[in-house]
Amino acid sequence: MSEPPGSPLIFRRVPAGVRRMHLRRFAGVLRSQVAGGREFECLITTDGELRRLNRDFRGKDYPTDVLSFPAAGAPRAPFLGSLAISAQRAAAQARAFGHSREQEIEILMLHGLLHLLGLDHETDRGHMARTEARWRRRLALPHGLIERTQP
Image (cartoon, rainbow, N blue to C red):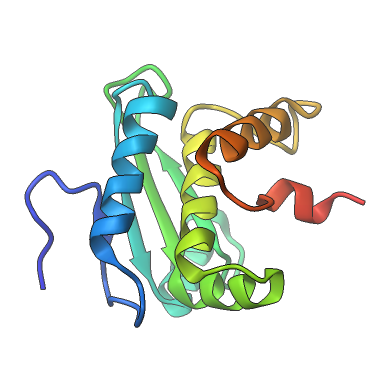
């Protein structure tokens, strides 16, 4: 099934129990509020595809939950870039942290979008973590990726 023209979400496979319209609305909120109206796209796909992307673009041969691919000129360009999210990782992480798969996909979208905006939690001495926490509170999301890895 194809996505509507201009939709920021691309579903390679629709995970059971995931409401497409809900995630499209959330992506629209991210676009308008977090990205300042700038566009991005997000592929929801499988562990296998995330593993291939991670290997091909980062040289790391294992699946991951979210990847960010900034566009040329990002974070100031009108099109920020692309995200890829593993629906399988999202389901497993949602179970592990006690929230819905949709909430986990939202957490992953926010995290990936912040990377498209130029933030990097590995080098910015906590700026991305604070920014992500602030947006999670505003968007009523559970704990994010950065918080899960900190003691």
